[in-house]
Structure formats: C-alpha cells, structure tokens
Length: 208
Image 1 (cartoon, rainbow, N blue to C red):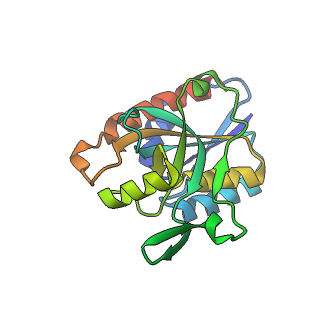
Image 2 (cartoon, rainbow, N blue to C red):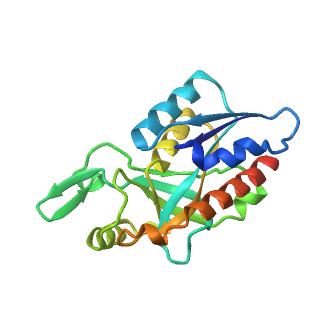
C-alpha cells in the first residue's frame, strides 16, 4: 500500500514523521507539505496524485471549532467540507454560488472513507474552508447561519477536491486548536492539538 500524507506545515506532522510508526508489511509512506491555503493545497496535492498512484491520501492538520462540544485538543474526521467564500455580495447580502446558479460545486463529501477502526471512532464533522479565518462576532454569526459548520480550516476542501477528481481514497483528520470566536490567541491550545493529532495519526497508520 502506498500512502500520501498531506499537511500544510511541517510543524503539524513533525512528531509523526520523527516517530516512524510501525507499518504493515509492504506499506510505503510519502509526505507532502503544501504550504498554507487552499490554492497551494489544491495545486500541489493534485500534482502529486497525477504523478504517482497512491492507494490512500491522508490530510492531517489543525482547525477552529464552531461547535463548543468540540473543545481544543479534540481530534475530528471532516467528512464534508465546502469553500465558504465562493459567491458574491449583493449589498449587505451574501449570495452563495448555488444561489448565483453558476456551474460549480463548492461542497465535497467523503462518501467512502477508509475502513479504519481508529478513524471510525473519531467524531465525523462538517467543515468550511476559508481564506480568512473567522475572528469577528458578526462574521461568525453570519457564517454559522449560512452553513452551520462545525469546524473551519484553510485547506480541507481543496485537499478533498484533489482526491475526489483523482479517485483516490482519502480522509481529512484535524485537531481543534481553538474555538471560533472573537480573536483570542491566549485561548488557543495549539500544542495539545498537534500532540493529539500526531498521536491519532500514528494510530491510523498502524491500522491501515
């Protein structure tokens, strides 16, 4: 089995890479650091999947949580993601791409995630992918009304799109670093999120 691990930054998977988890015989792992943002992630993931054949792609990263039941440190499996900012402004109203009637699908769903016990035990959540993470009470309320997301990232939907068009089985796994609220870096717990993410990632890889 050949597995591609995708992350936006080296820091998010540094512990995983350094630990070299035991793998089933014949399993090969390659890592791809895309850089932050959906454009970099879409382009580099799509290129990697076009140049080589992988049996599985795994996206590991952090996220913000709109759902206060998902506290910092919690690891989740994002099974549905959308590009939240794709649309148009009509004065004070935001029109989604669906409302504009344009032939673009902004929503990506993982209908057939890998059969993995550890992955199956994670909360399955819906996400949004954004260029600007939310940190303003008015914009948070607006996006919550519009899409009811549970988490947000800057890369998730792009990774999922690349996998779907390449027909490669995949999973997007993220750890909550913060609650989405008026920007408050003191309330973030990035260290615990990354530690839990890497621990979970090792478990998933050991049971592929």
